[in-house]
Amino acid sequence: MVKERPEHILLGCVADDFTGASDAASFLAGRGIKTLLFNGTPDGHEILQDCAAVVIALKTRSIPADEAVRETLKAVRWLEQHGAEQLYLKYCSTFDSTPEGNIGPDIDAVLEAYKIPYTILCPALPVNRRIVKDGILIVDDKPVAEGHMANHPLNPIWDSRIEELMRPQGKYPCMILDGPLLARTREAILEEVEKFGKDKAHFYIIPDYTTDAQGKKIADVFGDNRLLTGGSGILEHLAERYKERYDCAAGQALPTGTPGKGVALSGSCSMATCGQCKAYAEGHRTFSVDPKRILDGSLTAEDLWKFITESGEDSLVYSAGATDPQSRIYADEETAERAAKALEQTLAALAKKAFEAGYTRIIAAGGETSGAVALELGFDGFIIGESIAPGVPVMIPLNHQNIRIALKSGNFGQPDFFERALAVMKAD
Image (cartoon, rainbow, N blue to C red; front, side):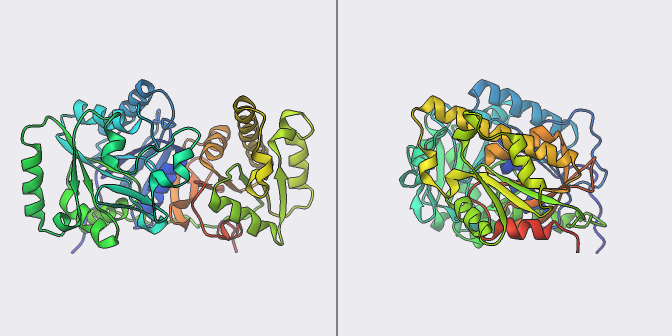
């Protein structure tokens, strides 16, 4: 049977930060769905005729809730105007939010604006060790509130039960869809959903998601819903549903590799990135940056740029905190925030210098670093290519198709991520 090309966007996804958006886009593209990613709600862009999915990256995770809602609704309206068949709100698989939001307020605003009765809350990403069981979010084999997210500087997690995380920030009740109920037929599940929602204006469903089989079942049961929300795990199963109905392939794909020089820039001190920086330092050119030296003026972007360019080899510039925990200690919180901002701005400036000097492979690690790099480079639209690691695709700027970019969330990627990424993005 010959499948038709989609005449409209099948999936319009709004993500609350840039690395989350590239994460979502990679799972769609990895299943053969032609996907574009935009940095912010597009202005004046023409969507390619055969594009099946669009992901819009916002920076709404940690801003005031009313601002987040406003930006989210703006992006959703743009997707609606461009014919999006289904909407998806993407947030982090660790459910990063505070009692004030922004996950709950964003979801409620879309439910209410489009008169949608309910949606799912599905942050699980089993391939990266994030699962949901009996309504509890488990990360790296621990309930999320018992791990490192309990002390997150911006969005500390105070409970592992998604229902309790939603209670202070969302307006509506939760239905737990546990394993035994999820194992029943689609019809039986939807009957229970109808019973639960009979006297409710809106509500949320929290399904178990510990295996690929459960992910597929969630997509089979709720895959036609107007609005879905969660992490990136469920997206690959939604992608398979789209492929059953349409020819979603990208046609002749652009090559993953490109000629030219490369540089990696990391501001993350997450556990995964720490190991990746140490691994790359064994046998490759690296520079460990203590942000205190940026604050006191003893190290500048020009010094770091000289290091990057002096040998002509690929190199990594990274936060000293990845290999030296003592460098993360500051006199007070204000100094720590200024140091983090200074490092972020310096790495972004290096990315800009690299682009202007003809570097064609640029990697950024860490959510804030990646966002700053994307903003500084000014690329606002990307074609999504091959994945380097789950949730980390090669991205090709629409207006600079000789460039290859990779933006990595802190805890994503293999131990040899930086070496692998620089190699994958290089033309043979």
